[in-house]
Amino acid sequence: MNWDIFLAPYAQAVDELKVKLRGMRRQFEYESDQSPIEFVTGRVKPKTSIIEKARRKGINPESIEKELQDIAGIRVVCQFVDDIYAVVDMMRNRHDFDIVEEKDYVSWKKDSGYRSYHVIINYPVETIHGEKILLAEIQIRTLAMNFWATNEHSLNYKYAGKIPTEIKARLKRAGEAAFQLDEEMSKIKSEIQEAQKAFLRKEEQKKDSKK
Ligand code: 0O2
Ligand code: 0O2
Image 1: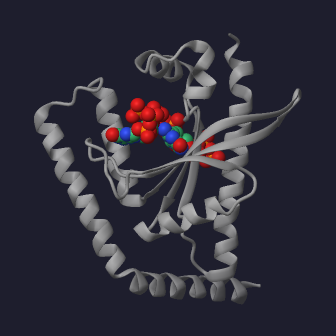
Image 2: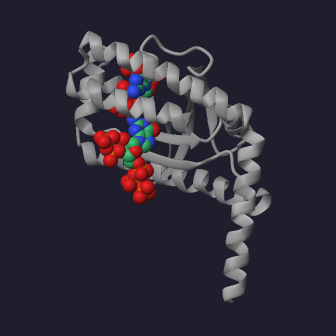
C-alpha cells in the first residue's frame, strides 16, 4: 500500500474542514460579537497509529477506510457546554457532509472519565480521479474537557496505556474538577459574555481611533 496516495484525500478533507469550521467562527464574530467556537484544530492520523489501531481492533488492511472513523480528525473547542450542542445542531444543518453517527460522551462520559461529543461524517473530496467519500471524525468539547483529554492522552502515551493507580485516581479527580469548572462557568456565562463583548468593543474603538 502506498500510504502517501492513501492519505492524500484525508489531508485534503482535514484542510477543507478546518477552513470551513474556522469560517463559521469568523462569521459569528462579525455578526454577534461571540462565537460558540473557540478554536478548531485538525490532523491526519499518522500511519503508525493507523496500523496500531487497526491491529488492536482486528481490522483487515482492506477494511481500514470503511472501519477506522478517525483517520481524518477535526477538533472544535468551545467555551461552554451548551455551545457544544449549538455546534452539533449547526453540523446537522449543513449540506456539505452527511452525519453517519453521533457519540455523546458529554452526557455519558467514558469509563476513563473522557468527555467530548463525536460526530462521524461522510465527507466528499474531489480527487484527480473524481469524487471520493471518506469518513471523518469531528470531536466537539469544552476547553476544560480538552485540557483533561490532552493530559490524559499524554499520560496514556507515556505509560503505554497502563497508567499507575495513584495517577489514575488523580486523573479521575481532575476529571471531576473539570466537570465542576464547566458547571460553574455555565452558571456565569452571561456575565462572562458581557465582559467579553465590552472588551471587543474597546478593542474596536482603539482600532478606529488609529485609522
Ligand atoms: P501530538 O502532540 O502528537 O498530539 P494549523 O496551522 O493550525 O492550520 P497544524 O498546526 O498543522 O495546523 O495543526 P492543528 O490544526 O493546530 O492541530 C494539530 C494538533 O492538534 C495535533 O497535535 C493533534 O494532536 C491535535 N488534534 C487536532 N485535532 C485532532 C483530532 O480531531 N483528533 C486528534 N486525535 N488530535 C487532534 P500534534 O502536533 O500532531 O501532536
Ligand atoms: P488519537 O491518538 O487521539 O488519534 P477506541 O476503540 O475507543 O480507541 P473508537 O472506537 O474509534 O476508539 O472511538 P471513540 O472512543 O469514540 O473515539 C476515538 C477517539 O476519541 C480517540 O482516538 C481519542 O482521540 C478520543 N478518545 C476516546 N476515548 C478517550 C479517552 O479515554 N481519553 C482521551 N484522551 N481521548 C479519548 P484514538 O484513536 O485513541 O487516538
